[in-house]
Length: 155
Image (cartoon, one colour):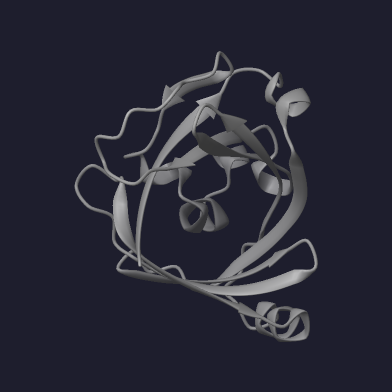
C-alpha cells in the first residue's frame, strides 16, 4: 500500500514511438485535501477509486490504496466530485527494467507532459531516457489534485 514514485517533465515526444500502451484517463477528486486525496478515475473502459496520503519530505513516497469499481459507478461518482477534471492520454514505455507512464494533458492543462516511474525503494537506480527532463517529484504543482484546482494554463 506504499507508492514510491518519481516525476519528470518531458522534453520531446520521442517516447510515443517507444510506447506499448495508450489510454485516455479522466479523473476528478471527491477530496483534494493533501492529507488524504480521494480520486475517481476512468482509464479506458475501467473505473477506479484511489485514496492517497500525504507524501514524505522528498515527495517520493506515500500511502496509496486503489480498487477497481464498475464503469457505471465511476461515471456516477464523477458527477459529485469537486470541480476541476483532469483529462489526459497515458502512454506506457518500458525503459530498462522499469515502466514509465507518460501523461499528455489536455483541456486546461494542455501543454503539460509528465513522466512518472514507480520504484521499489527511494534509492533504486533506474535508466533515464533522452526525452526525460527536469525532475519535479517534490513540486506539488505537478500533482494531479493540484492541477485539478490550479490548471497549468493559469501558471
